Amino acid sequence: MHLKNVKINDVPLTGEKAKSLTQEELYSISQIIEQLEDGERQIAEYGRQLEKRFGNLRLHKFVVAALGFERVCFRKIES
Picture 1 (spheres, rainbow, N blue to C red):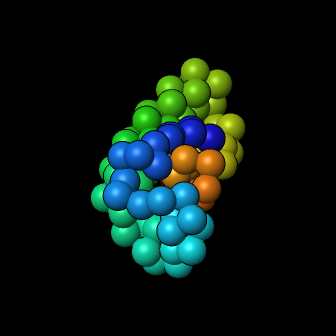
Picture 2: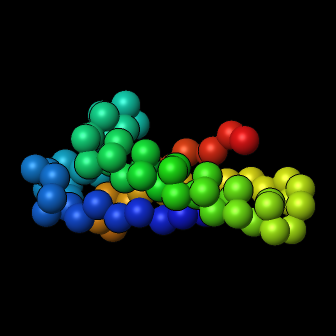
């Protein structure tokens, strides 16, 4: 799992507004998209390095992006 953070101040939202967003709205925020994509690239590379070193580990890879303390987004990375 790789954790990324988006500061609530970096997104033009209040904490209350962030809490009321639908999942679709949350996952369409450009900073969230950017952090999930960046985390996906990083976790894929970490996974490749681990599997190269230790063999087939059957890893379950996830990237998580938090929007302040209000919301959390995640994506499972398929091998």
